[in-house]
Image 1 (tube, rainbow, N blue to C red):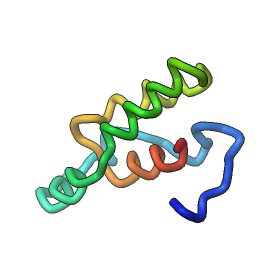
Image 2 (cartoon, rainbow, N blue to C red):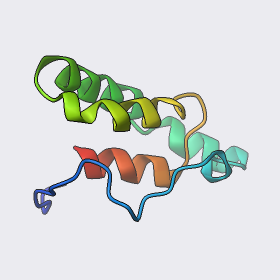
Image 3 (cartoon, one colour):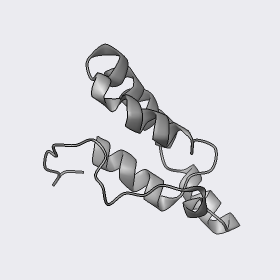
Image 4 (cartoon, one colour):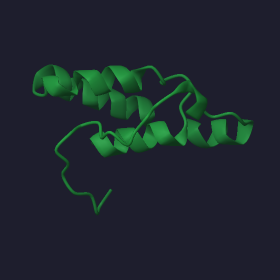
Length: 81
């Protein structure tokens, strides 16, 4: 994330999250288990509660996929960060 640039909206229109994007294979589950997804969602939740109420929709949306996430879900979290 060293080459990121600021965005105006927390969740861009080109991101469509669904349960079909969740990891399907054991290999993908193993790969996604190493991603700090829960920690990133917690950080966004802290920012939402303390200073950024506009993040409430995206935080609730990405929280749905805490137990079974896919690569697209992680891309959305990185976009918001």
